[in-house]
Image 1 (cartoon, rainbow, N blue to C red):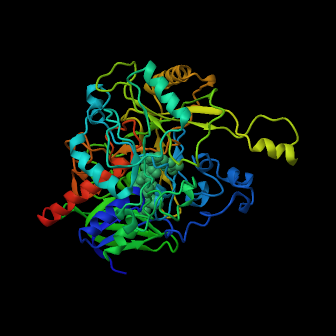
Image 2: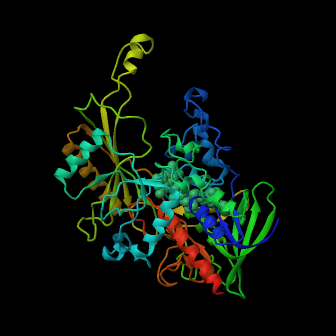
Image 3: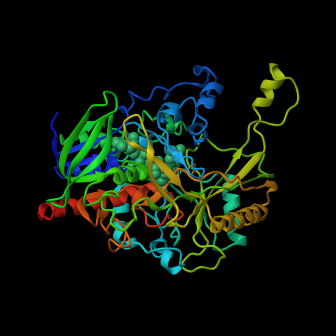
Length: 561
Ligand SMILES: Cc1cc2nc3c(=O)[nH]c(=O)nc-3n(C[C@H](O)[C@H](O)[C@H](O)COP(=O)(O)OP(=O)(O)OC[C@H]3O[C@@H](n4cnc5c(N)ncnc54)[C@H](O)[C@@H]3O)c2cc1C
């Protein structure tokens, strides 16, 4: 196999797929290195069309599997139908100084196969909130810098949503939304009447609701609302790198994809002051090999990218690539999902909805927007929705005609809200490498030392109070709420550790996601995040990646790299 390329991309998930597409389209011979096995669209979705009775335990995971995998089995969407897209705990150990549930999917496509597909844009406020509210450092870019790149990726990904003109959640290039059901519409109106600044809207989801030409060219079609997205969608109805960016890159003839390639480290050339390539361990044979390229995109997912950088040691950078000021691995943050509120809403028993809906509405952030007004910093998005529960309460026999008759009658309307809160990037929330323990490929284990703080507690308290009040305003009864104190990591939005900034003393990356101290390395996954915002982050990683590739190729053409 060739060992020299124009570009190397490490990781083939959401951000790596975008790096590959953009680099290949611009004519660069690109090698994508992926530690997991290959996954081909449709062919490798073994459960995609299975019915509940086709599964041994009707969709439930065996007790034995859960006992062997106590960590990964906690993940949202984990089930017998999806477990093959999640790692198994014992294969990929790490060390938790404080409880941290590190959720991973190691295969071609990474977590893009199993993500939830929520795609809100950041508001202009998030890029400057850290300094305005005194909890961190501003971004080196603002909303106007990234807005055209959001548009660029939204058009290709296929994002459905409503156009609402909200400051907290700007509009984009949206396909038609699925729409709110009758109880959601009622909630929206009641909440608006009581709190004019709170907007419950259709949100934005990477789900194709209109089969435009650009999706047909990708071999993707309209979402069939099967609500089985995380098994892999044979219609390509939701976005994953397996259905979209990677096959698109392959069509250019410029892509080489090498699965089973565990990246060990990035090699630094002291003479050129640039990275010369990547050291790889074959996941199966454990053979070591080296690949070279002019430019390297690091997209192994936030914590894995930090691990690779920390492990890329040279005499110039003994503490990890570009890590002159002990910033690498620090300021790791995540999203706070600790609270869930639910209730029942009466009066709509004669109404139902048509079909299934793979999306849910959002109440856009209404806290600390533009200026701090609360006793905590940052904001939160609320995911919400209303549905008919199971079937009517019934105490008769659990079989026979009477039972079947009851099953035809849906139960009461249930309503829920859960938070996705910003957390503060702190120097002390960090990851590092173990001095003594290694993984099966001889790479030191990652040590996570990441926890909540008082700001998170105050935000949870506010959400609990406000969600209960909003449910009361909507007319709900039997409302319950709580703080589940789940460990960080289970939110699956880990970010930071190699943040963007204005100079090497405050950050690892510049405004183009380019390493200040090693110019031909670009980090465009969650590791680059200077702060977390309150919106789902992946669409921002995609936009930052496309923007960074454009810059990298310009720099290559100017012979600056
Ligand atoms: C259940 C679930 C729901 C989610 N919902 C949402 C949502 O609604 N909205 C949202 O924005 N985000 C959501 N996320 C998060 C989203 O999946 C991630 O933000 C996104 O996948 C990150 O993209 P990435 O490219 O950084 O990493 P990934 O998609 O994880 O891809 C990284 C790839 O790098 C590979 N890799 C790792 N280490 C190495 C190495 N050493 N060498 C070679 N390859 C390596 C991995 O195998 C993987 O394929 C969700 C995640 C999960 C699991």
